[in-house]
Length: 502
Image (cartoon, rainbow, N blue to C red; front, top):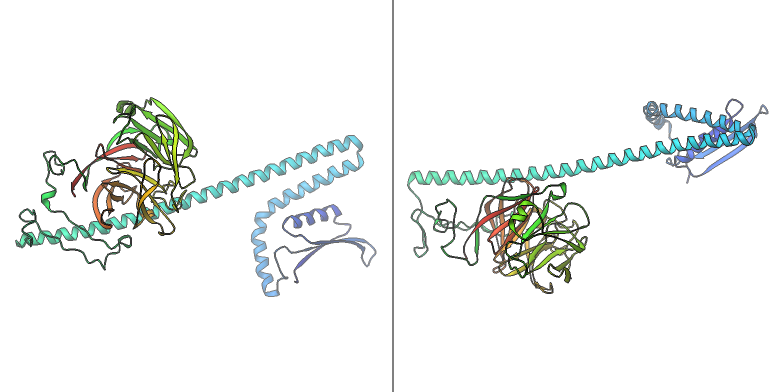
């Protein structure tokens, strides 16, 4: 294949050493074939000719392309002028050293070698400095890309929240107009427990819904099920301690704030089914910023946890990943770092009792929650036992929910939903119902979806959920205390909840 070649010649006015140096420069720029020739010209003078094939041009430019190439070279010349002058100075220095080496004997040779080594060291330092600057620029560029993605996601969430608010305001305006006309519709089902003035809500048109690709319906609960108690909080039927549907989430209560940057996000928990020597007050905490996470802080009493004085520190035999760990029946359940394996670590004996790979589960950033953090595999506990929340390529990134045997970690049952895992901030399970949180950074987020494993039906929700510190990286349910535990931007918080009758 023809290629463009560049030729340099020298006579008495250009030393051969300079020609050789220029040839080396061209060679360093990528050329890998060259010809060197020495011959007398027509006047009888000795002439050295060095021909190098272009490393980037398959053929020499035509006349119409030459002007463009010249303009490009002119634009670059001002930048490279200083480098060229520096290079010339070094060439002169090298020629001087070479002259000393050839005429100065052993002592001169040693001095020349030292000089050459000094020049070589300076060149290496400049090279290292340029490489460092390049790495710094790449890191800064990657950080800008991440910040841009985060801002775009937050913008999208705010736009969606604005749309939801506008719809709710429109509905409220219509309701006020009806009330003013005195035309509140009455119920068509006298047998139901409906307060005077309440109205039945018709089902949505399932063919027009497009939330998370779900065929869902929005259900409003009769006012009789949301009566206020004296404190102004909604309550369930008096004395009811059984299962129910989530109706209300209270304000966050801050119990503890992490002291160092490693506590930006993490996981904390209490055992809803404590075994000896642990009690209902025993608390565990794991800071999950960084790599090689193995430390689990144990607090015998709540007061120790709030003051930051652990009674024991466990060192796990294998590093864990992200904020999906839970404690249940005396064991810590967690995802092994960079794997789809779930492990059961018995806290009292400090030994691994079981481990199981979740088939097809994404891990290490394949299908995390919206905030990231390698939250691909999230363990959860409810009144019925141990669950794992994850996603697979087969389910195209939608949430998969499986019930686990707490002894051997075998999968007992599995449900596939249509809720995209990367579009929600977190998830938890209450009474066999999966709930998702809309945003990890918006102060006024919502519990936005529910999937009932008993019926296989999904519903959209708008239960208010407050991210007080604007970075919730973990939300879990404790069925013994009937509270949500969360880790919000260095802060460990709890939320009271209220359930209706099933």
